[in-house]
Amino acid sequence: MIIAIAGVPGSGKTSVSRILSDHFHFPRYSMGGLRSKMAIERGMTISQLNALGEQEAFTDKDVDDYQKHLGETEDDFVIEGRLSWHFIPHAFKVFLACDPHEAAKRIFAARQDQSENRDDEPLYTSVDEAEQVTAERMASDDRRYQKYYGIDYKDPSHYDLVIDTTHFSGPDVTAEAILKGLPR
Image: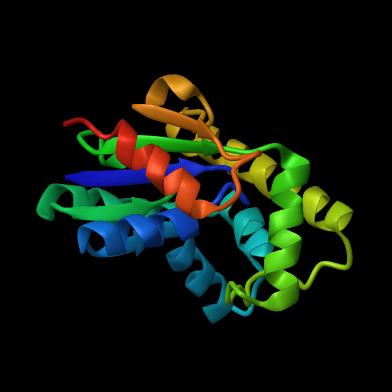
């Protein structure tokens, strides 16, 4: 079984994918983590890498080829990535939605206590700044995914399960909802 977790920034993809990976004792792959590493290696923020990606396909294609290869050669893993549903169509595909302001509050809090090691993102000065930067990042994602693949990752018809995490009390609740939604 392959579980592909997609969603908007701040919806809980990383935390939920970790919980599911631990639950099933499956390996976990993070496409956002790969892109983060790519940005850091180039001395860039993720926003700068995304801007480069609007002109240079390698910033997306390298990661996308990697996840496609994983889907063709491995089984029993959890993968976190906005386009994993597209490159691993036989996976159980989950989309995590979240209100933009709530997502920005989560991102801001995580950066303030540095619970997520995100050296590719700035330390935001406010929730409003985190919300603005996140909106710009999502707009860049939309432009790149349309340019390179002609797809909208936020379209719920792509997924087996769509969960709005806005009012959930934490990633454990989201993980439990996914476990209940898995095919038997």
